[in-house]
Amino acid sequence: MKILHTMVRVGNLDQSINFYCDILGMNLIRRKDYPNGKFTLAFVGYGDESNSAVIELTQNWETDKYDLGTGYGHIALGVDDIYATCTKIKSLGGKVTREPGAMKHGTTVIAFIEDPDGYKIELIQLKDHASN
Image (cartoon, rainbow, N blue to C red):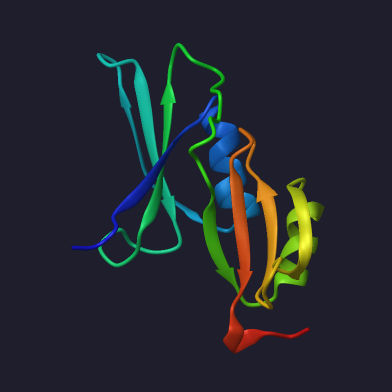
């Protein structure tokens, strides 16, 4: 078995695709409208679905906002240089909600950002590439 994708419901699909692709550097792998179901699915990621887990962005046509709920945690992305990544995200209009630094009760360097719908994304400094 392997993880295929994580699905999040989004209010504005184009805005979310812009965030994940233009700000986080993912690729739009595929997008398909389902008129009978009144929804659109878009899959984004860093690699081909056959080799990498991806994110499924689901837009229900008649819903433009969701309550995030208390069960959702976050998506985690490993980055080579967390400080430069956060600087770039901010320069592209992304929202950093926790600046890079050691995690509470540990030494791993992390940061948090939010996508346009408020979903949390944790950035984790890859140990092989720690620069600070």
